[in-house]
Each structure stands twice: as structure tokens, then as C-alpha cells.
Length: 345
Image 1 (cartoon, helix red, strand yellow):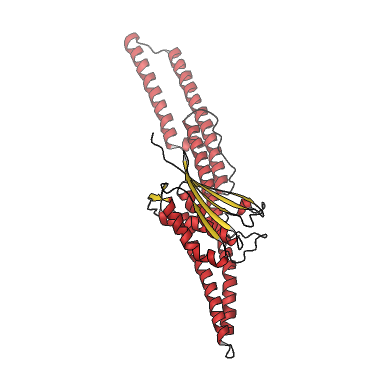
Image 2 (image 1 turned 135 degrees about the vertical axis):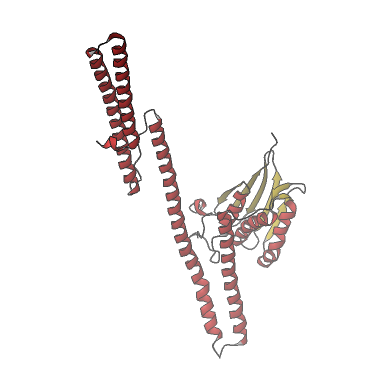
């Protein structure tokens, strides 16, 4: 019998038999000692009682054994790849508590497997996207290099091709740097040095960074907000986030347009808005603008690499902030950043 193959169960049955035999011998011995005779009726009662107890234990353990065999079969099915298998645990008892824990473990393993698969798929897509993004500047550099090797090329053309090559190299450098930043944020390896920072000072840094470009393109950056608004953040990373959004605004505006950066302190949040009156975002693109390497078929921007907005979103969320976007084609776009103000309980 399989259930007796279990050492503990076998020892239990042996112990019950030993106790039953000892009690029978002791009872019959006392009866003989005091009455000088054995009782056949007592012997029969003991035999029937012992047999009933033994049978009850046997059938109980056989049922438990069947439950365990079924559980082992289901666990093996799970290990063989059937991730839908779960142990039945709708009854009370320690065994079913164990089954419930096994089901919870299986659910956690499934979640980890799904996450790992998603990460593999993301890595595959990312590598494909990076390869695609690098093809264009590498092909351009190859062409420029071939033209520069031409002995008949004029000095003016050399300067032009050198400038174009520099632009492509800058584009590749920006791609690599942004990828490194996003990877560090994803891995949680960035240590933010947060402290209370003056929002007006940070926004002036952003405006100064793009001032030359704005003048060259005939655009205007306007700052608006109080001087006494402070935000608990890492200044460098937060400036990076706002700069990426401001750059996106400049990329999608034309000569004579404006980019307005406003900030304010509300009862529960510090709010920063980056507005422009440019071409706006097509409704089809709104759900996807924070996806990495996303390029709109409606956008005239051919130089963007699709990492600026995802990086900005990652930085803002790492500061426990929220970012929302509202846009209307032909009228402009508004990015709203909300950072909750910690309250003392």
C-alpha cells in the first residue's frame, strides 16, 4: 500500500497497534489478577474497536494521499509548462493552506515570467530601434567621408561636409547619452540629490540654454512665475526634464511662435507648464508621445530620435510627479507637470 510507504504514517500505525495491544494485555492481565479469568467479550470489543480505529485512520490517510498525488500531478503539469494549473484549496485545513501558498507562489512566478518576457521583448525592440536610429547618421557620415576623400572637392564643400558630419555625430552622441540616462533610471541606479530649489532659477537656466537657438529661429521663450516658489528636487535632472519638453516645443514651432514656461504654487502641488502655439499634436499621436523612439507620421521633424519626452517623463515620475499633455492641431500644445507638496500629519 502506497500510504504505508510514508515512514511517518507507517510508524503511526505501528504505534497505534502497539498501544492497542498493550492496553488489551494490561486489561486482560488486571482481569485475570482480580477475577482469575479472561473475558472473551472484552477481547472481541477491543478487536472491533481497534480495527475500526485502524480503518478510520487508513481511509483518512488514503484520502489525504490521493489529494497529495493529485497536487503533485498538477505541480508537475505546471513545471511542464501548463501555467494555468492551480491546486484546489477551497476547503479548510493546514494542507489547503499549503496549497493556497503554492498557488500564490505560482502566481508570483507567472508575474516574474511575464515581466522577464516583456523585458526581453523590450530589449529586442530597443536594440532594433537603436540600430534603425544609427543607420541614418552612419550612412550620412559614410557619404560625407567618401565625398571628402575626393581629391577634386572644393574647400567650401569640405567645410560644408565637415559641418554636416559634425551634426550627425552630435545626433549619435545625443542618442547614446539619452539611452544611458533612461537605462540608469530604469535600473534604479540614479541617486537623486534632492533639495529645495528655486523654480524661477531653474527655468532661467532652461531659457538661457535655448536663448541662442530661439534667436536664430526667430522664436521667443517667455518665463512667467513668482520668484518665491521652491521645489524639492534634483536640480540637474529636473532641468534636464523641462529642457527636453522645451526642446520639443521649439522643434514643433515656426518663426514668430512663442514657447511659454509658467510655474505656480497651488494648495497641494507645485505646477510647471510648458506651452507653445505651434503645430500641435495629432490626436492619433497623443497616447504614444511618451513611448521610446516613437515617430509620428504627421510630424515634419526628421531629426528627433524619440527619446526626449520619454526621458522627461521618467525623470518627473522619479520625483513623484505627474505629467499631462493637452494639444490641438494648429493651435499648440501644453505640457503640465504637477509635483505634490508633502504635508505634515
